Amino acid sequence: MTHPVARWQTDLERLLAIRSQFVISGSIHDSFLTTTDSGPVLVPFVRALWESLKLHEFRFLLIYDPTDGIRVYPDENALREQAEKLFDLKLRNGTQIVSLESLSAVMKNCSAQRAMRCALVINFASRISREAAHLSEAEYRFFTGAEKCALTATPIVTVETTSPTSSAPGRPLYNPVIWLVNRTQDLPGWYTLDNERVASLIIGKPDYETRYASALQLAPLFAGFNDAGSAARDQFLKRFAEGTEGMSLAALSDITELADRQQLGIRDIDDAVRCYQLGALDNPWRKDYLREKIRDALPFIEERVKGQHPAVVKTLDILKRSVMGMTGAQARSGGNRPRGVLFFAGPTGVGKTELAKTLTQLVFGDERAYLRFDMSEFAESHSGARLLGAPPGYVGYDAGGELTNAVRDKPFSVVLFDEIEKAHPQILDKFLQILEDGRLTDGRGETAYFSETILVFTSNLGIFVENRDGVRVQQVKAGDAYDVVEEKVRASIEDYFKFRLARPELLNRIGDNIVVFNFITPDVAERILDGMLHNVARRLLDEFKLKLAMSAAVRKALAERCISDLSNGGRGIGNALESNFINPLSRALFEQNFDGKQILSVQDLQEKDRVIELTLQLS
Image 1 (cartoon, rainbow, N blue to C red):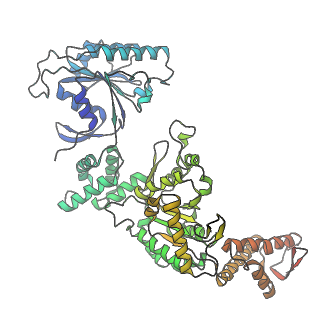
Image 2: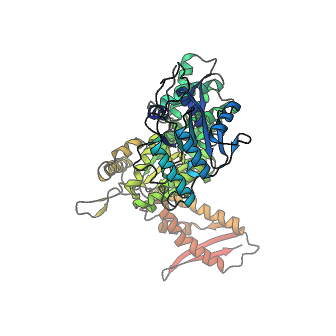
Image 3: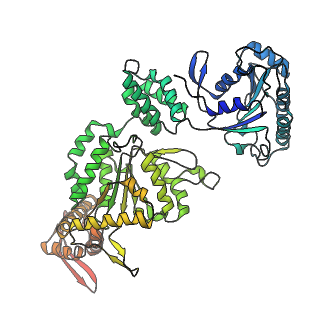
């Protein structure tokens, strides 16, 4: 099998006859699949460059960097002696520190050299000047001399006898100067401007074909590859190449090194890629106990999220699909998508956020793995810089984004985007990439991977709508049948994404993962109130060692005050309980001396002059 040749190599060989200098940027620190005397191997840039140039009778490379100075490649005694004689060098231990003025002389000599073919490679050229727009006098002279050298150099035919195997016998070629930079902007802007003798080449990320060919070279290091059948081998190579989209070949080598150290086989290629992406060796999704926890999770969840049985059941179905790794299984390639996507819709205060927290506790055993973003804070288009990171060149770009930083810090997490409809549409566009590819790159160029997260969006869409007069009216109310609530809320969500935002593709990525919550019913409200009173009693016991007791009359009076209006759901019940019970209880306790007391009994609740008073008895 012949491997693909990197684009920059073919372009450089093609342009050697008409370009005297090359500025190469991009993935210059990557590895490159190159044919050597021993066959195709992954090698660093300098080795790949040498393998290309030696086919055209180049004898050696002079490599300069600001730290180590000049050295000769390949590092052979005969070649070092030739270089010292031709370029007036005195190499000690293979290197020589030179000034910019001396480097300029070497550059002129190399470009005009007739005795043999050679090239000057200026590595870490981005670090020659501290600021390309404000050069020192010595730096300005150096780059001006380099520009003149590019314009005055001429292609040459060496006096050496050309080998019959040469790809272009007797063909005039330049002895090129090759600048390796992180970005072309790292050189003075005028240097390459209107200079047709300088070619700019950008090394991009390897394509699928290159990654596949590289995977073939690395595959024998995976346990079981050599003994596997052809079908299993081919499947492994495809998964390796597909799962590393957007990665460098150096990353493929690192993944292989991780797999070799952990004795991962060809069936574990997804785990090996994940380990590299996330920097985590332990995968909570693969724990044996997780299936047992989810199998018995319904009572646990409904104890915390009351009265939402259909929503809880559908959420668990989606969670089970995530645990089994079947998310996106219908697609040809969906391995990098988030583990699960949930869109919680319905009235306020009915348990949407609480269910997200409960899922976090259930899967990861720790609510600290729960990441929440209030999307009302991102209503302006410029606020996307805060969430995703500012673009390069803008203030704060090096800090990254709140979302990308958080996911890199906690790759196994539930990520909640609260009230998603309040975010600016341009910010919503970023979720297309997350939902489809499972990754997002911030302003620093660092990638956050969402492949092991559960994404939860919440929304109140469909509860209130605007009528023909533009007046906001309630579309569904407490007491409506759940089927009616679900149908109208779903229709409103579809209308919002398809027609108001004109982004049907975002709704399409969410798919059928919309979970509609019902209004709180009176019987559920009673259970919620009981749970909140239980929490109050536990706090009293923890803080003051007092057991709370309450008469039936007080309990009834609280119920009348706290659950008469259910329009704000469980959160509204909590607010009412705070005003009608917790505040007057705290006021009454503040005046009491309860040292040595064990029981706090609430005897009566009355309202006088719009102030609620509690009658307490301590014993």
